[in-house]
Length: 566
Image (cartoon, rainbow, N blue to C red; front, side, top):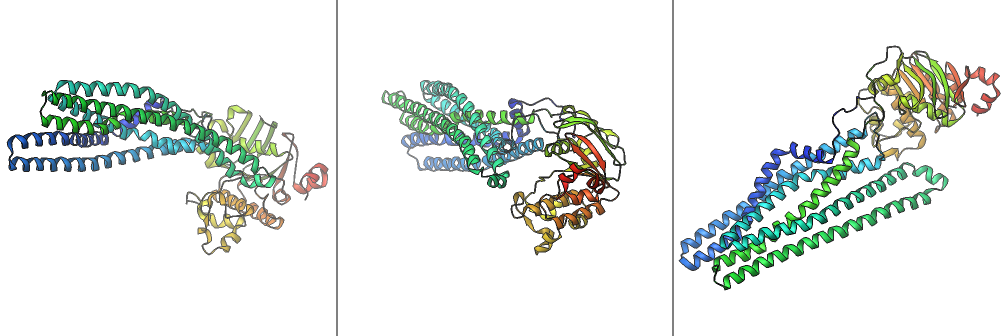
């Protein structure tokens, strides 16, 4: 168990502020360069107006050449500032998105589960799409500021020609932003709901893929598909709603911007007709009216992206601020390897009590599968210590007082449905690349035939979830990984249910030999594993009802014989 993060929880606003603070340098340079870009764009129609004015007044080739050179400088500035400005901002955006993806993934992968009502598929969506959209704030702010610079420069230039033109741009921009701010709030709430529904659909797909084989087994695939189609339809309908809101927003913004540009053009034409501005100023005003459409578009779109970033940040905050299910301790077990279950009550377990001495090989024959699963969950620390009565002690230390790292280093609980990852046989057996017992683990788990079957041996590629392996091969691979860890205490839950009887006999003997002198607990109904154990505990109705060797129990206990004999 890791020590929980005791820092102050970070709501969405704090996440956005953190992203902005970490990228101050990139945003400053990006804002400067994008401001130069927008200023250059604004200067272009101004320069054209001055060229027309001076050319008509001076009729000088030198003035014309100087004007053309000035236009070349403006065009070069526009091109280079956009190129380098966007490069800086997009690099910062990508880096920040990576940081948040790693942080959300780290929370989801912590040994102590977080108290958040989200499935793994939803956390995956948050760690990808929401992290990317939150990081977009890095680009949004500089673009917002640079667009504002362009609008201000245009307003000042028009105001120098006639104060009414400048005021028209300022008042019109304020009116447009006021209208669009109302629509942007609707976009934020709709987008947040869409993200939640898409995440639920993704989680449903992940669940279905995980259970595809058993679904086909009992014919439940059609019902499962209908269930997914319902969730996906809800996500689709919400996506359509978001598209409508976005369309209304974009259409309103475009219409208002066009109205403002038209108003500036008509006003400039009326002033020129009335002789209050000259022809050069008219050309400048008309050019700025056309140009101002682009920064106004960017400026008016930014509130929408801010709301989307905030919505994504709020979803990330669900994971990042969620407290751990339990507060782990910091103690470490004493050397030795004994395991003690002291009056544990959880689920189907009723005052369960037994002790496994250091170096002992004990098998537990659970008559009820639910009881076996409950015991494995308690030993694996998947159940918080305050969620069950009694105590579990490892090396004399209470499980609730230990860190998860200490528990994992001292005791490994290998589930019956151990996950297989995309990679190779070797990386699945020894993910950290530090085990010194991989060959012994491969041999003990009878995975040797799989290794020998392929030319690449242990470097044979394994598909996601072991899709290119049989059920028995996946189970033996999971067992090899558990044995390669070489932990002081090893708990195996039904490690041979998918292999044939002959292979099971060999695995049982190999495991007993490899684990000699190391504490081993096997929760199983396999006669082969029960036979090699030093003693067998019979778990019935949540309590230990009998204890002896496998062969003595077969001879003296009819219920045991009926339960485990094959």
